Length: 364
Image (cartoon, rainbow, N blue to C red; front, side, top):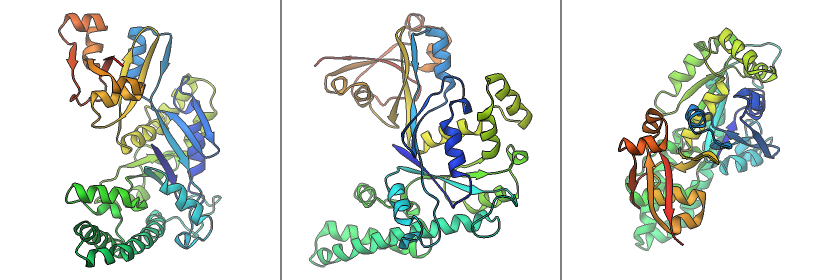
């Protein structure tokens, strides 16, 4: 599961990506490794794993991760191949969610591609390019499905009706994510279309350092614009985040954050938001060898969660032994939580809850 950072040139995308790539942006033990020049695997900041480490004292700790992709800056005409348009659109299609960076700061030394700072216009520029590309996809698909629909094929008629609804929305400059599936068939079809504007999105308002806590007039404009989109807006001073990554010690970084009025780096907030946007959650395994956070889809069952460790665990699943994170911390250990009756045995139908501490019994 990957989240792609998008935006116009010079809005701070690559600087943000580089902040995420620097371990010091979060804390001393948050590694980051580059798979390709523009893809990074970033640890998800989670104070729960630090608490489990404190209680269990394991030999090693493994955190949950999220893939972040730095995508080339988009320009007007990208849907027709302008600039790096085709590459940009290909890269974003491969991502599961979008982190849209908007410039919300004034600085005469940093040129804006359109001459002045206007995050509303910038957002619309990118939205329109993505919508035009989706419209092209929809119209090609409509051409194919119309013939089958005319013969009375029910599945084709269902698809044609959905395609027409999406087409109408796109023509009104609305993204495909505004279309709500009316039944399971439509849900499956929507997924199969792989539309760029159907992907979940969060907006990052890149502000100056003095606006990092409360935002500014540009942030207010963005919030007003996206209030009906069911999308999160995050305020981040990318320049200040870059300065934080240059500091050597954890103590220096904390002093810098306190001076800004922040409790933690904005990069940490963004990583957690991206994880949530990808509909991911965490369960833990905790033992003296290792305390580890495992990433699963929200709604995953116990066997599916076991399968993340090894496919054999899912195939031969017998039961899951579960202690909730809060109970584990309250009683201080697995043994004491068991004594207090907080240890549960769950079967194949159990839907894993975020923060569950689990062991699996299996037989292959």
